[in-house]
Length: 358
Image 1 (tube, rainbow, N blue to C red):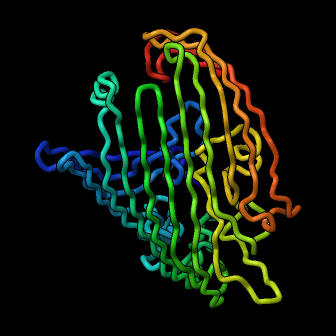
Image 2 (image 1 turned 180 degrees about the vertical axis):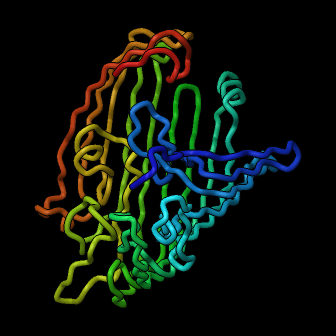
Image 3 (image 1 turned 135 degrees about the vertical axis):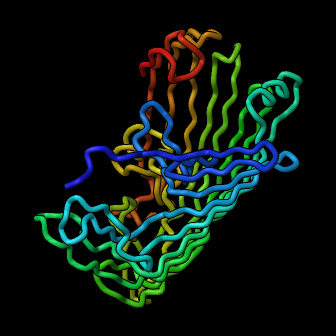
């Protein structure tokens, strides 16, 4: 039994011209290039970041300041009380919740100011720093809260997790004339005492993960010709078999020297796309690898009213950050050639206006 309609995003905003803005509810969240937090606003986006959040934001001396508390996970939810389907679901306990605190400071010009500055021959520098803290004491991950019959649900199985992580994330964007350079880097530092869902083992793992992405774009010939070069890196783990994440935390392999105590495979958000086949569909997200992606595109038709007809070709070369992590122990993950033809009607400059095909 499950709800027929699930609310993806429902939130409220309260603004005060002098103080700032207060938001609360379930809202989308996008930061920087979308390496870790990705709003998934693209036409063919398969994933997105939603947060249950209470957030306050203000602007001082040209900088935006944000602080938020997220109800990242509530753990075991009792769908009914005493098997009565007319009851409302409720959180069975607080000790299995994942708490998340977020702080950010950023400087970003609005779109009109950016266009004016670039038209005057000036450069534009946008940047921001995001800091996220998470913790969880107990876990009910291995418990089932689905109803098979109209019966009271069994008590959840609570396992000591004792997990804590610190995640700083920096984003920088440089614009000058027809050039765009953009960079995002994310670091995950923390510890987890136990990664199992059905029992307790004093594993005492450290978490040390690093990932970054760089994008560059240069436009010529009235913005019709585009030259692109992207690259990225996600740290790997020599004590884990396989790059794909199937479920839970990757199990650390035992070696003659003992079991490694560091979890270090970094994973990009699955909606941060770099290709069509390998990372998007087979692996489902960039993880434990680095890549280089040169590309070239040309818009045969491009007018101010939004009409667009063009083509683009990208070459993606991927390699494993830790070759031992791959099943074949080969660092070279192959080269993918992606060709795209796209068309947009002239109903407006926004990508969601009119008809779009790719």
